[in-house]
Length: 340
Image 1 (cartoon, rainbow, N blue to C red):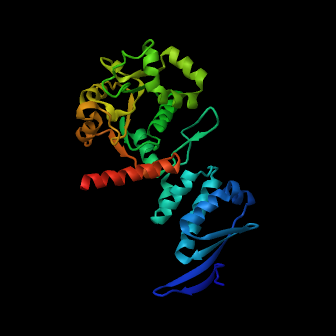
Image 2: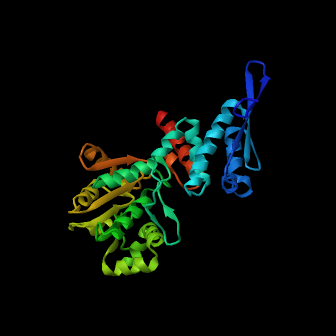
Image 3: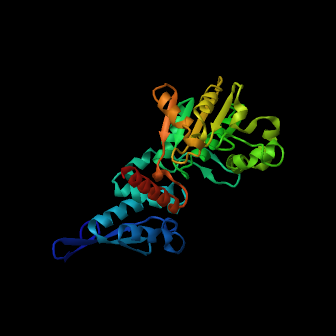
């Protein structure tokens, strides 16, 4: 037994030697152990599977056994997860896999750069905050710049965090209006064939923005501010000819804007306003191989002061892990197609 409470054993194989150890961790509070293990030990099963170790609990002791390197990684992951629990963060499958990925790269210490302060709390009591380093960079850029581009795949929180920042600025009376817009129909916003009045026509395309506002403000507060004109949700075409002062403006699904639409939107920005442009350049649906206004804008504006360009990746996906795996699979497939 070493002074740190680990027992060593050696297994000899044909061409290499495997050193197995057992590491014992003492946890102060039993409730932290319960939260760490999760329902039916689900969280610990993930750690065991990913690191190929055995983890058991005896009272307030956690024993980790397996190959030395794997045990070290599992121990480091558990320390990070316990820090999250002490801060009051709920463990989810997503943040467990994120911690595992950081430990595997030896970069888990960089997680201290994440500011765990809430942006706001939803009407159901859910705190909204950065969950990854990419999301933290995104929020920092929004705070520091007048115009921020958030570019990344589905599930990285681009739109959700942007709406949260808009609602916070509105509640803090930093701005007087929230304006949310997106290309209502990818191929030129042709709404005439749809049934109903204008609101009926555009609502299906703007539903993700409505959903985020409902969650953060509640339907009644949202409707009241919508009627007062303090919140506006509209297709991109209705931004033409306007100057948007004292506003927080979000352009969503910007990969489906044309260069002309993007330039029109960018020149709407007025005094005491902030704008966020979000999009996924892997999901461009413009017809006839038309150029994406988002791709062009990023090239044109990359050296302009007070404009930030933040690129999120599959590591910042905060939905089900399967979404992350799907994105990786498509990236591998597309890379193979390009190399042919």
